Length: 443
Ligand SMILES: *[C@@H]1O[C@H](CO)[C@@H](O)[C@H](O)[C@H]1NC(C)=O
Ligand SMILES: *[C@@H]1O[C@H](CO)[C@@H](O)[C@H](O)[C@H]1NC(C)=O
Ligand SMILES: *[C@@H]1O[C@H](CO)[C@@H](O)[C@H](O)[C@H]1NC(C)=O
Ligand SMILES: *[C@@H]1O[C@H](CO)[C@@H](O)[C@H](O)[C@H]1NC(C)=O
Ligand SMILES: *[C@@H]1O[C@H](CO)[C@@H](O)[C@H](O)[C@H]1NC(C)=O
Image (cartoon, rainbow, N blue to C red; front, side, top):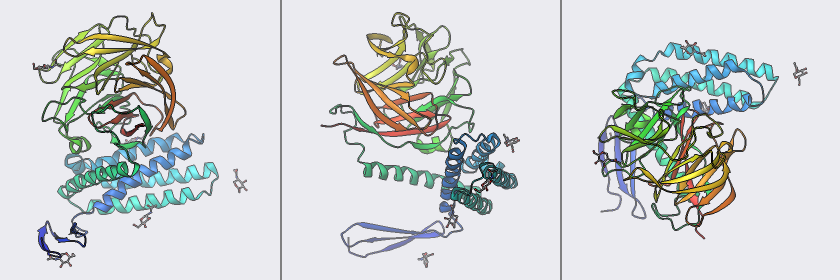
């Protein structure tokens, strides 16, 4: 290619020029007229709404229980998410209501400020953000919905890129996918919050999300999500890729209650080889729902007790996990007096092939996951911090107390699982899709 050659073409009502730079790199410039793609506005809207939540939580956490603010804010956050969530919902959006809510929110911030008797500059920045959000709402109103859809996709792609950039800077992914040539976890990255769940409800705190840990060919990009306002496991949705997940457009939603009652409980399920592994509601047992054949079956887990749940929530008796070496389930037994037991599942036989007993009490553990045949257990440190405090190596039968703290987005969560296909941890944190990068010890 010749240096400085350039091409111009139409791209919507903007234009694109491509050229070759000094060191031979490709340079692509895209001019987007402001009226066509207010992507920056949508982006700052998202940032503002996230930041508002975080800021207010910061104040609330200082013991001042201004419940009304929290309620109003979660309502507002949901409404703002609705703006961004796709054409059907967008069309129904009531901009006037959104404005009223912003004004009400502003009044509540004033109330909060007064009750704290604070002249903190944090409040000024909150006011600024509210003002900015009002402006953004005004601007959004003047764009048509098809543009908003495009922006949503572009924005999501941008988010992914930023995430990738951050990974590279932090030097994550230091071990090849699938490889176990490492000495366990070195550290866990910052929480990456994708967004509020597809049900758009802050009450949907029982659930999980992630990717198939051993996808069938052609389904590598799929994501899944399931949640409820109770520990009952009934609906599970599959998305063809990350963008569909973010746009809340499921390929299909499966109902475990109809036509047959195959319902589960406990929210520590995963998908492996297009099969959903979960805790069966009744009788208490492990179950698998084969998504391909859409049939379920269950098996009792010898000795497993339904008396010992994890620390945060009830009914979390069987916790499924998958790693580079296959499928696992953790639970506790009466014989172990509530200590955590780990079982390896033979997928073909759908039965436990080997069992290991640990020395930690399940009820003090908040969750557990597997990486390369090593069990990791977490516990709560405080409302913002979680810690991987224990590791059990099934190869050597050695256990270790470790301290690998990591940040939470919100204080409690029901599911945390590692996925060997991308070496990320997936957490369902108080209704939000959260993930973490993992860095391994290599020397
Ligand atoms: C491309 O966009 C820029 C900025 O809007 C404008 O100045 C320029 O004339 C456009 N070029 C073409 C070929 O349309
Ligand atoms: C949330 O918004 C809806 C619709 O505007 C309203 O009816 C409801 O009262 C709000 N809830 C709270 C807790 O503010
Ligand atoms: C609020 O703070 C001001 C200045 O710090 C002080 O004079 C005033 O007494 C405080 N009011 C209350 C209700 O604490
Ligand atoms: C509000 O918007 C203005 C103009 O776009 C920007 O300079 C400012 O940083 C924004 N303020 C906040 C708090 O986001
Ligand atoms: C799921 O069902 C399909 C089709 O009947 C079958 O080929 C596959 O082996 C099943 N998978 C599991 C994990 O049972």
